[in-house]
Picture 1 (tube, rainbow, N blue to C red):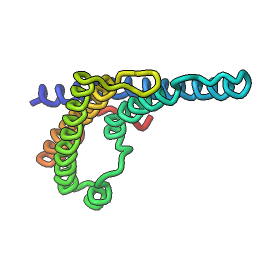
Picture 2: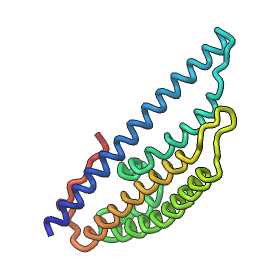
Picture 3: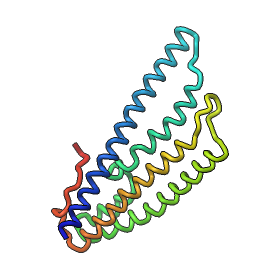
Length: 182
């Protein structure tokens, strides 16, 4: 049984590393977008030469920014969902039962959206789809969205496993999960 808890804790550490890496990448991308925006304003106002295609670049970069932090926000409990219900039963076994239910519904919805994004990315790749001005291919961003959502599904599956164990044993000391509050 100790091997089970070790594998769950190791899975959390690996998943947390990937989630943090994606969030850091997203943060640097935001910084780069801000610098590009400042450059575009200065270029247009001072030198009267607008930067071509910047809106296309921003629109596809925002897909990466939006999806890169989704799994981390779930792990850090920084999202809004059924917290009103789970907080009413805080510290009881019902809290874990509602957590299992919420995660199961979340997995279903997120998997459907991820599959949809994956199929859309496949269609964009096969039939060609690109931004208007600079012709940036869009299929990679659909694939990135799908992969990011699958990462969220993995986090939710891990939460279901932990909540199921807590529902049965009610002993949080078995798990050594990453604390994102630091």
